[in-house]
Structure formats: C-alpha cells, structure tokens
Length: 200
Image (cartoon, helix red, strand yellow):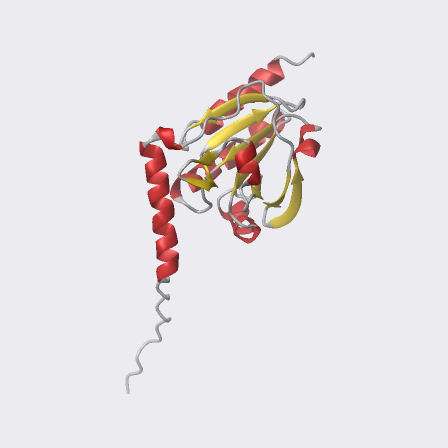
C-alpha cells in the first residue's frame, strides 16, 4: 500500500494587520522618495550634535549605546533609516556592514537608528548588519526629532539621513537621500577628511 509522502504544513498567511502595516510603510517610503519636501531639513554642519543614549543591539546582543562614550574613541557615523527589514534599509545595512572595517581603521564608530523595538533590532543586527556594527532603538522617536530626521507625514518614522559627528560633538556631515546608495561613500569621505586634518 502506497503511503503518501509527508509534507510540511504550509506557512501561515500574514495577518491582515501585518499586511496593512507593511503596506503603510511601503506607501510612506514611496511618498518620501517621490516628494522630497515631505522630509525635514537636517542639522547644519557645525551644529552641536544632541547627546543621547539608547538601547542597542550588536551581533544580536543587547547593550546601551551612549553617544558621549563613543565620541571618546573617535568620530561617530550615526545613520537614521525608516524601518528594519524593508528593502532599502536592508541594502543600506549591508553596505555599512561591508564598509565597517574601513570606518574602524579610521577610528570611527558606526551606529544605525530607527524607531524599531529592540527585539526587532537584535535580529536586524545579525541578519542585515551582519554583526559588524550596532543599531539603536528609538521607539518614541525622541532622538529622531532631536536630529531633525523625521519624515513629515509620519513624524515617528526616521528619514534616511546620515550624520558624521566629530569627537568634539559637532556635525561634520549631514547626508540626506531616500536612496540607500551614496550614504556609505559620503560618510566615509567625511571621516577620511577628518582623519587627514588631524595632527600627526
């Protein structure tokens, strides 16, 4: 008698609320790409970078990120992104992961920030950031607002903007584009320029 082969159960379909959340995020990001005026202006070069601390994750492990502590080691590349595991944010995280050794060689620390919760970022820090750099959680969007990094139509969500902050706590670069390409090159050049200007 023939016994049918065992088949694993089909994956459960996404819940309607999960589908709605994904759709709303996609629509917001599409609008922000199409209409640059929806995003806020960045902090100006030379402005004081607001100090902050936040729950973060590195290689899946939770820790507390403190900007002042990171600046004691060198410049900080602080990049804001809209939502973990969306396509553009994953591409950007991969690019920063690949470039992290170059930033580290120049004495810089890379940290990404979004309004995602820490449990999501534990996974994102491994899967997208490839355990190369930390990501920090800002679920209340407090830091996002301090850095003028919010999307106007959804103030709780970060725009795609990258800052380079000097060890003295001043903004060296503010690079804003919803296109994930270009952020690594711009921030790396700013860090290289900072390094070249330091006394030998």
